[in-house]
Length: 114
Image (cartoon, rainbow, N blue to C red; front, side):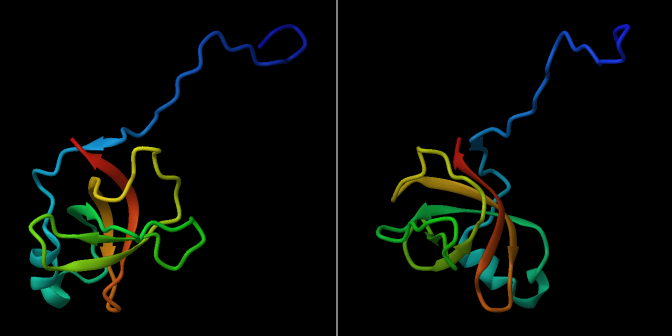
């Protein structure tokens, strides 16, 4: 503090989340669904691609649909945070969040696959 009681800072340190995430420990959609009720509402990582024509605004019930990279399974995703400009249809992403009983994945973090 200075003489007037004002806090003086010489450095500002911020922590920015990385827009990239390694998919090594992430599940495929097929594998996640295969676990059934054992994974409902529990924190998990899942990887896939943003399905064509599914990107929506932050206030949409479904932000986008995640598709298995090898085809097959798809899963609607709810996410209320900001997405990087690199998040486009077909982008490979890694999500952290939980699967609800309604089959919708509620993401707490969305990152491009590293």
